[in-house]
Image 1 (cartoon, rainbow over the protein chains, first blue to last red):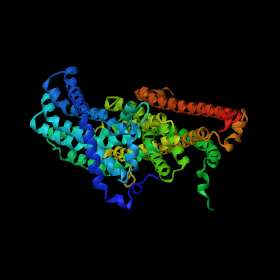
Image 2: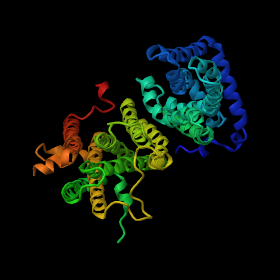
Image 3: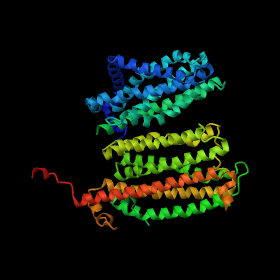
Image 4: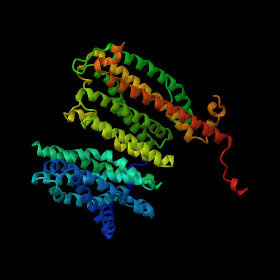
Length: 237
Length: 249
Length: 59
């Protein structure tokens, strides 16, 4: 039976925080060893964002309308590209099995890995957003709202993405299948995230959208790691 | 009278039961659809605002309801399968996905044909149509994941987790019409206040909904039977089935 | 009768919608039938030529 309780032994229950710390530290260290890979993923984001004005038109009004949407979609795609990194390498050399067998609660470890993923993917994307938003003739207020929305939303992308990454571990069409599974779940985040900027521009204020994103983040933080852990166990069986 | 429901939790006993139920529900679906279509296409009066194009509602709304309902049922069977580790629950979840996807497709297509004459466009990215489209992708995702995993038990559990993760989308679709005041008309049928449609239209819609439900049950049970035979291939009771022993059965 | 098909000018939309749905349902039913036939054929061949037991390779 796959339940959260099964992952917590009396000893391991108070090992949750150390487990998270350990997983974050380890995954960050590993990720920073291949700094090129991280840089390439960020570069992918920048390039995709630059493609749209080239394909449509550099007309300022059009750009500033498109801007939030483009930046969000590019963030989604960049997230998808980086998700296999979360579990695949560990799965391939059987480290994931060892991690699952450790006395640390697996949920905490999976959560830690997800946090590390966000730190190396979502956080840089959110940090770059103001700069890239300037390419889209977005004004200061729009940029602030967009960055805030991305800062709240990108962790959700990592949390939900972890579920997809775990479900597709070791499968043949892994990458595209992952996209098919995860993108529908991403859509509400996209709608509220990009909608925050539109709402702010329309004078309605971004509060409603950002609050919804925040609520989604809380829900995802509580629930997604358990689903991802269940998926990891399924892949390891 | 007490029925030991757990008796039917084994594929071997469920199979003949389902075999008897399929023609019953299929026949019921045909009769209900005939009545519902007669009411919807012939009897119900022409709508004042939308003309006869509104008659698509007798197809669109039941299909949309079923698409959401079937996903929730699929998630329910998945929860059972994950919780109790039963094969048959997982097989039922596996059987539902294609029919659910079909209902979603019918809802989307009929919605497009309804949208063109009434709103002027085949497709509008409004809350409910977008959510229904996402629902289609969710169904396709579950089916794709099932096909991508060779081991049936791993596939059962993985699709179960996926289905349960996606079920969050259903309330979003359901409430999307209230949350966003966009193109889509607000829900016209609610259980607490009197419906704003003429009662003959409501009757037609409800009968068509039951027709859709009966059809879905028949299709799902039929598919479940095929899945059972495929996955329980080596079992003795399968070899003893008349349709397996005797080609003419 | 022709008024029924014309649906006051909306005939194309109404009948396209119902027609598509009918086609989809027919396709599903046909697919169900053919899958059942295929699976039953597979089951028959399993029965007539059962998979070799664990000791078969040692003969």
